[in-house]
Length: 130
Image 1 (cartoon, one colour):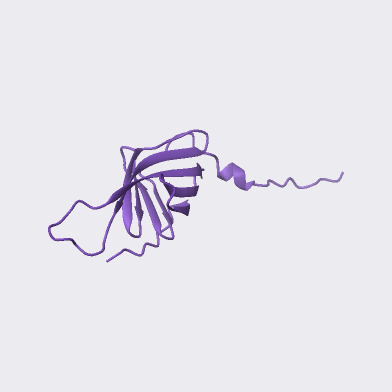
Image 2 (cartoon, rainbow, N blue to C red):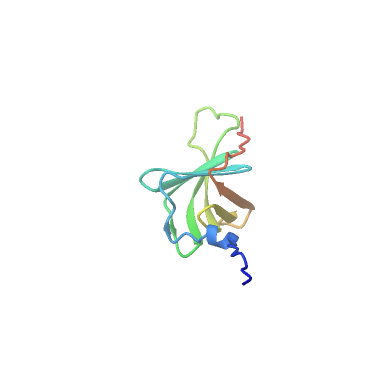
């Protein structure tokens, strides 16, 4: 009798299931120019090279992540007298799986947009403004 070995194939999509609900508490995500951290209470903060934003608790619907927040500028010359840092309303629209968030961060007025490709547990590569 001839027997054939059984081969188990792990499909990448099985390991990259879409997130459905809040981003995982305590998780961190990194990319070139971006870092996303999620606190134990589930509130998220996105940090960029020259700006940051507090996202609050982000609800993901079957892998679809859309969140609007204020993108607050950092760095540059300090005005005299000091002013509040400039901020701009932005929206992050992305596909979110348990190990990757890919999408676009864009200004709500349409003046700019930037691709975002965050990987869970990846060290961010930020180039902070001076």
